[in-house]
Image (cartoon, rainbow, N blue to C red; front, top):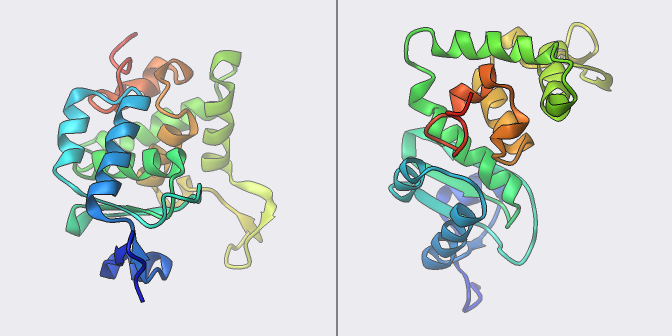
Length: 194
């Protein structure tokens, strides 16, 4: 039985999280609108995101996790964790931009360079990039030939790196060096600064 303050879950919410109910569309939309004001999204990005379906499973819990359903123009998040929402919105933003000739490859090159960055200003992003490029030897992965998580570079997974860095710095472009920051132009304010 659905509680009065919830609505039946969409097929994607059931498939992604196993939820039988979710927040009503107007409540989910209001939460995302507030998110747009808490972080430095550009007006262009907000306009783009408003054209998407935006769904939240449970706003009473700060659960992480989410999905970008690119073929459906849908972002789903499990709970009210800002980091998860930033991550999935970054996926939505990057979805078609990465398909422009040379863009994904150039971004991967920038992430490799970031993994070697030594400026303390960019330490958090450089650590994330290091994991993406070199993996995490202390994180077992029985499916990996090395026995540990090999990172994302080996598979050329630019889309997860893009979203991971966006949520890793929570949209604060001052925490990314200019050679990476430029890929976030149009998504976050300050990405165009040199």
